[in-house]
Image 1 (cartoon, one colour):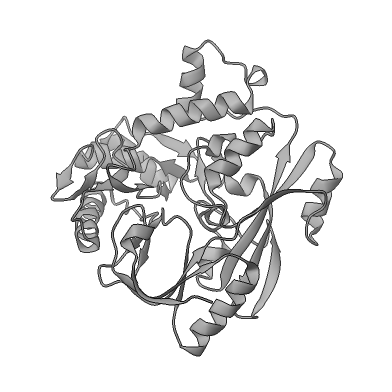
Image 2 (cartoon, helix red, strand yellow):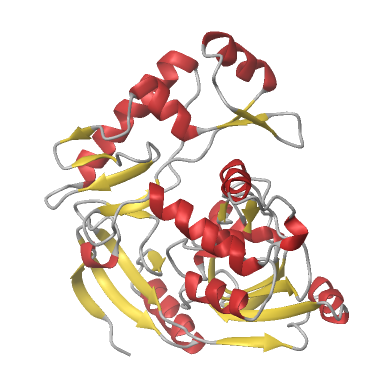
Amino acid sequence: MDIRENIPLAPYTTLKIGGPARFFASATKESDIAELVRFAKKNRRRLLVIGEGTNILVADVGFSGLVIKMEIKGRRVSASASASASASASAADPETVLVEASAGEIWDELVDWSVSEGLYGLENLSAIPGTVGAAPIQNIGAYGADASNVITNVRAFDTSKMAFVDLSNEDCRFSYRDSIFKQKKGRYIVTSVIFALKKRGRVNIEYRDLKEYFKRLGKTDPVALTPKMVREAVIEIRWGKLPDWKKWGTAGSFFKNPIISAKRYESIKAKYPDAPGFPEPDGRVKISAAWLLDRICKAKGLMEGNVGMYENQALVLVTKPGATAAAVVDFTTKLIEQIEHETTVKLEAEVEWVN
C-alpha cells in the first residue's frame, strides 16, 4: 500500500494549521487498518487517525508518527446488527431501523439521508462537520442531542489485541464529549458505527435556540414537527453562528461547556446574575463556555494577529492565513487563564492537540 513520507497536515485540517506527518496513508478498507497498524508497530511510530480534520490542532513541527486518513465508505440498513444483545433488541423493534455507516462517511450526508428517509434520531446533529468515525469518539452533540443517544454498536480495530472488536453502547463508556476511544487513546480505530433510528417518533426541540425558532413560527407542538423541519432549523441557526469555512480556518466550538458543582455555580451567579446554568442528572450544573468567553473576555470578534474568536459566536475560534499552532495555544491559554482568574472555572479544549 502507498505510505507517503513528510506530508504537510495543514491541508488535511479545517484550522489549516500544522506541520508534516512523518508517514501518511489512506485506508479505504478494513484490511488496510490492520496492515498500517503493523507498519506503525514495526517502525515504532505513534498512530493518528483523521477524518476531515475538523477537531484537531496539529503542532507546527508536525507529527512524528503515522497518520491514517480514514476513507472507508459505505452505508447500509442493517436487518440485524453484529453480535450484540443491545443491537439485537433494537432489531426486534419494528419501529426501529438499524443503520450501519462506515467511519469515512461524511457525517452530515448521513444525517441528510436519514432525514430524507423520514427517520428520527439524527436531525438535531445536522451540519456538524467531520466523518462518522468521529461521532462515537467525541460523542458529538448539539441542540439537546448526543450521538450516544442513538449509537448501539461500534466496530473498531483493537491495536492491543490486533483484532477487530464490536463494542456495545455500554462498552463505549459515553459521557459528555467523551468515550472509551478518548479514555484509551490510541487503542481503538473506529471503522463503522450502528445507529438505531425510529420510523415514528417525537422530535426534540427542548434546546433554547430551537424552542425559540419554532415559537417565532408559531409551531410549538413537537408532535406536529418532522425531522426535516428540525434539520432545516438547526442548519439555519448553526450557519448564523459559524464562519464561512472557505474564508476562515476553524474547528467550530473550541472549548467544552464546563460542568461544575452546584455550589460553584451559585458563587458565579452571585457575581454574575445572568450566568446561564443547565442542571445535570448528577446534581452538577453545565455552564455555557460561550457565555464565559463573551462575558469575561469579551471574546466575540477578539483577534490577536491571525488568530481570534468569531464575531458571531465567542466559542468558535478562527484563523487567518499565516496562523500558527503556537499562536492558537498562546491565544487560547490567555482566555483560559482570564476566565479561571475571574470564576475559578478552567475551560478545557474540545479540539485535540496533536504533536
